[in-house]
Length: 288
Image (cartoon, rainbow, N blue to C red):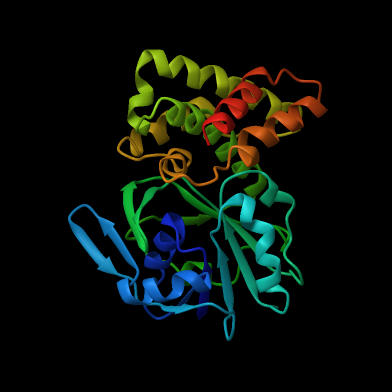
């Protein structure tokens, strides 16, 4: 398969490194980053191991069967221009809830990946694997049928991928978990594992409970307990720095609007209490 990944960040490079060798890989980057990435290369690290990712670095989309979108949630719609003439399969992997209702131009085969695997972008073109987690894929456009031969795309060195039918529910599950972990870890400058300290854990639980209540009011039925899943992620990625804190440290825009902001908006539409999501939304915006 010819595969192009849009977004050479931590998760984009993790997915790139996980593709089986028989696939032909390209990574689409902004023109201003092309030369430095071609010079430095693309890399994945895991512990003491460092592996170069074999990929062509391109600035235009051409001759590809599958596009994997791994950009920030606020950049999702900006990929429309790149995809306007593309008729193949699309896979999207990112945070936030907007992706549930997003369909690229000419889309007829779109799947979503939800992952809790920990990774950080330690340098330009470098993704550091920081912890295990679950990774699932589900279809938005094929009546829950799995994308053709997705099992043949990825190896299992960094994660095992399984097909699910309830992908929208799992997008919501990840969103409510992120709504609790990301702003608190970011405000207090914590690794994920430090959130287990009592003074932080109570904040995580309160914010999580509010987000879960909003999700349920919006018709979401969680099959897994959100608090249990949150604690699993904190344990599995205890050394990881959440994406929001990474963005703040690097002076980049965060996804707070696409996570807590959108949850608060949905809650207000349902006449739900959104006090905590609204508060953390403003706190993160004030320091970013």
